Amino acid sequence: MPERYTSISLRNNLRSHGVTENLTSVETEIHDRIWNAILDRKLRPGAKLHEDMVGNAFGVSRTIVRKVFLIMEQEGVIALPLNRGAFVASPAPDEIKPLLETIRLVMPYLITWLCNNLDDSMRERLESHFNITEEHDLSQEVRILRRLAHEHYVLIADLYGNPILSSLIEKVIVRTSMAMTLYQDTVTGWRPADSNKQINEAILEGDAEKAISIMMNHLALIEATMQYNSPETTFDISSILSADDEEIYPRARKSTKGRPRKVPAEANGVSH
Amino acid sequence: MPERYTSISLRNNLRSHGVTENLTSVETEIHDRIWNAILDRKLRPGAKLHEDMVGNAFGVSRTIVRKVFLIMEQEGVIALPLNRGAFVASPAPDEIKPLLETIRLVMPYLITWLCNNLDDSMRERLESHFNITEEHDLSQEVRILRRLAHEHYVLIADLYGNPILSSLIEKVIVRTSMAMTLYQDTVTGWRPADSNKQINEAILEGDAEKAISIMMNHLALIEATMQYNSPETTFDISSILSADDEEIYPRARKSTKGRPRKVPAEANGVSH
DNA sequence: CTATACCTTCTTGTATACGACTTTATTTCA
DNA sequence: TGAAATAAAGTCGTATACAAGAAGGTATAG
Image (cartoon, rainbow over all chains, first blue to last red; front, side):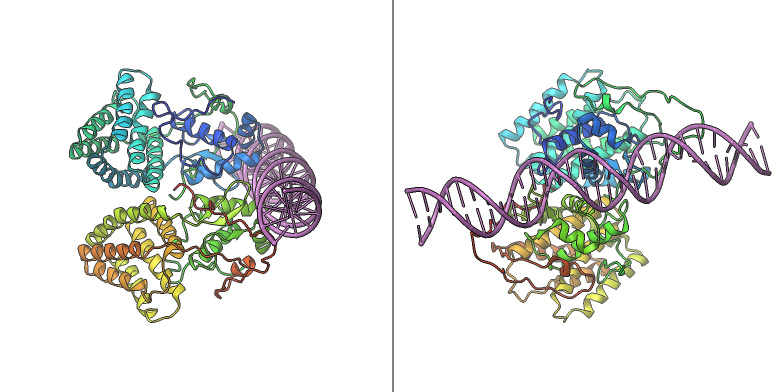
């Protein structure tokens, strides 16, 4: 089986998405593969996840797949409407405010602490992230930039060392990212890594106020650029979940005959 | 089927423990019954939950029970060590600090908002809780006092209206409560409702500072009175999970022959 | 031509069977 | 007598079979 794909910048630096304990390796594999596919937007919000397709892709029964789905529903990345199966969660517009509010509450607290308690190992991990961000700064690979932005938040939470807040931040950031997929204009030339680089720099300087201020502006920008537009596409699950990193683009619908497929409007997230 | 048992004070006032959506009525029933049993300390931390016992008690297969268990593991109230089944979570001593820290971060934020934005419906719900606390103030029923204290926190989070923070607070408070079961000296005459009554009063007066100060003292007291002591008992699951509210006391072990049963020391909670 | 009803096909939900692992009881050996 | 090895019982983990439900297609009436 291929080496587990955890993250671009922080391989072996962050434990992958929380629930590694009490899961077999196959379950972790499926969980992480789907999680990463969502994070990289290979699986877009609203996409249907068929139990036996995923099961076949990993050579396990639906039992295992259902278990992973249930966990991911609790994590807020998958929706499981009764009798209708699994969909990649598509956060409703009115979830954006609570998400950003949570980030605004928690992150300044973590940053302030971090600036006052920065030791060598923390500094090292921050600098490592900073360097990788620098490397990829001019990259056109949106996937990498987005992941770096994501991981920056998770890294800060992780450095603080409160597992409750870490897991909270990870969930909230993923969900915000998913909301951005849905409601943000992707045409802007804005690069997500920009402000994160500045934030990291400020933290390394020990300037909490500056770091917080940049982050708050960043969040305000995100909130301001949110708008409604709902895409609809279908996917080839098995190739998306394959081990290699190639980007898969949505395929056009095959058939438009017959009654139009009912859009699962209520296939949104859970009550987190 | 009996009416669903949600809470003492806030029946129809708080939605029960978060995950009602996407669960069938039986699943919700099992979930809430176990949750309440834990909250009321009928099921103590470390207690084994046998899949078929629970299944038989509700007339469903292990499939359903396992689903509920998995959800409750994510919620942090049950532990599912691989190949060893389900145990009521017993938070490790070093989890107490992160738990209290999270409460200390979130609650002042909520209280401050609440004091500045108190409207009639909020006031009404707070007063309702306050009145019930008054009624039971002199009660000897520890179970009720404990539940009132618990629900007070959840109510405040609920009034704020951010579902992410609500569910966070609910999980964290339950877990703190479980830790107190394990590590707090129960002999003290201290009544949990006392400070909550004062906090509620301060909020109703719109005095955020006072409310926060009392709560912080309360939390400090909790932290200070924590100490190590690990009880060990066995239980009759089916009667504990029965609909009626009678308190069940742990039974003494039947057999002490043979090799002493290995205590599941690692049967603690999950990484939340 | 459109909308509704009906039928077929496909997917999910639940129970159950069986293998794997853990725990408990018994035996063996120092 | 007590610890380790061994056998038996019990519980859990996974796959699978079947039932229940939803989605998609076709026919029919307005």
